[in-house]
Image 1 (cartoon, rainbow, N blue to C red):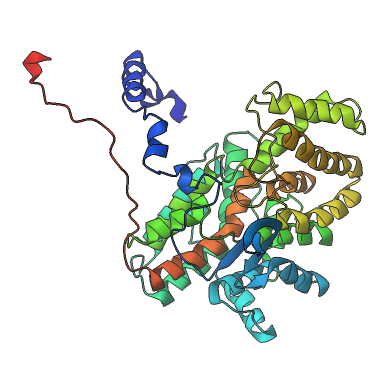
Image 2 (tube, rainbow, N blue to C red):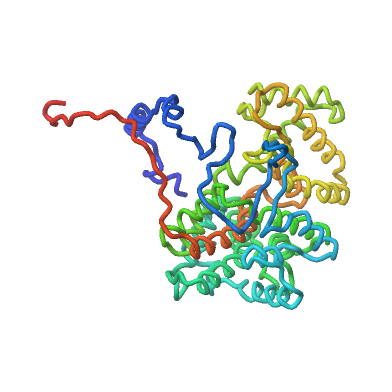
Length: 455
């Protein structure tokens, strides 16, 4: 394994050089305020600095009332359509909604029946990796982290494309559709390789089925017997819809805009977004929620005792429990304050799945923590906005009930978000006029050069 190689070892010399990096790269925090630099591209109120325009999606967290911006119930729009209306549409007709959502995000309007059927067939036809790709690329160098294997696989697909650098919209659309179709396979096959070669468990490889939806194919590819209930597939489909897009300002989508603006190829741009999403501050939050709840369930003896739950939550905030970070994972969002519309849309279906799985007690615990955490945080912390459960709060619990391995939580996020990334890449190619290049101010004092013999 790579960890045995010499280049993986941090030697005392490297430790010493690293200390130089730390000591010579500390910027005085007051300088950020002095020069009006917004860390993380957010102002003092937490609002993102405006860096672009988009038609793809919109996040609403505040509304104007009597001339003033006030927090409101969160809203999310895909191409101007409220996400709750989209969900109500396909759920009400007992259809799978992810494919329809991908069409909407890419093309800007809802498909009619014939258009949707043709699009679903197109995605199904693209659901085929190059010959021997799984054996030669995915299986040959398994990784502990599935996101890394996916990024490597995406970059390798460049070599299988006869027109990888063609930035015409038809060609980029073709590449995007192929990647959207292939991401479920790349995610699951990468996991199966890790499971077999690193975890020493049995190897399961199923071929995708053209007659199944994306959500159904994920469960089919993952499970040894390929079986699943209708509710399982529909809840997973809903999770994909809710994760498909979330504005141009989130880290991985902004990465897509930045990298696309340089004129690079689709595979490189997607690999960059995958690398962004891999970061635990972005794509790994739902796993943190599950791990936090595992400790909570072991610590809190009576799951119905609100005082006992509240005491544990206070320990979390006081850095006395779990990872000592002072965070209650799954609570709060960079944009939403009163509520995250994705969490609200998801919660009811997660409850239905909990009933099917006989896990109502666990669901009730999650619901209690959601309510009590908001109270505890508001009481303990001075915050400029409200705090509520975000999409990560329930998604990890949902994936646990579906029997999905934790290694796939973030790859499934990517499997959904490749739809939004693709829409934003096309938007940037059509509208982007310049390479995205923000300014950084140098605050290092001028120093003279000293000859080597005089140092």
